[in-house]
Length: 287
Image 1 (tube, helix red, strand yellow):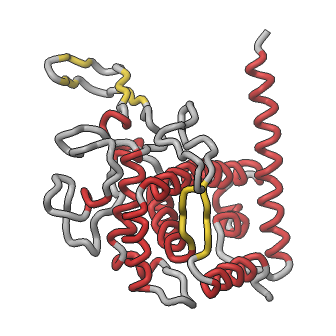
Image 2 (cartoon, helix red, strand yellow; image 1 turned 180 degrees about the vertical axis):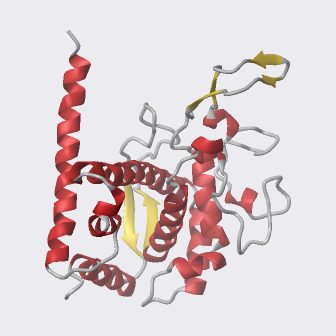
Image 3 (cartoon, one colour; image 1 turned 30 degrees about the vertical axis):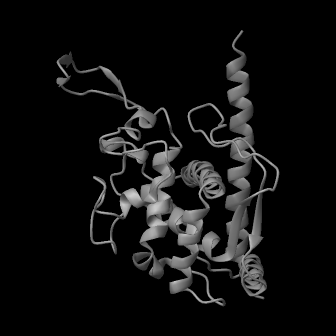
């Protein structure tokens, strides 16, 4: 009579199984002397202090991973789409990362203050193609008014991120992918110094008020580093003779481009080897 409950139970079982396995992997690594920092390691070392069961802890950390993995992947897919359509900005990205990182070193967190174009590209991707395009509904806790409309407590207000990010007064030429709007004083969104701005703090892409996305800081650091390192290592290009759609996205609470063809090639053999060795070391820190 309620098939949605069966589907929810199935998804819960599958999800919990994944989270339990991830927790078990960390527990086994700790037994083997692997001391890499992680949320799960912190939880396991201080579990009695937190007062959470194994499953409760796995869900607290697992949902953080689950929420961040999907949204970050969606934003990075939109980044690849933007680079296919904006080779000019990809060249600017390459020029900037090459100024701070050599052939044998990838950009790191310490480089980000010196990478305003990287930060502008990240912010523009989230403006141009917001992951939560429809926004998240909020409920008013006190009287408010908007353009002559009285809104009593309990009113549901739905902030439409797609429309907000295309407010023409704030974002001239809103359909254009244009990171310059965050870098040039000719645009109303420009702020300085460029060692700090643009950034994603209090940005509408992450919601508003007390219910702003709690993963904002993790997402910001992840996206900036991913774009910097991808720009350092690779070139994103259209596949010759294959059309890359301007907008062909999934539907749902979070959206992302549907699969599309493009080429991802290493910018040099040296950088390809650095990527391979970094990945190998990550998989086997002990060598």
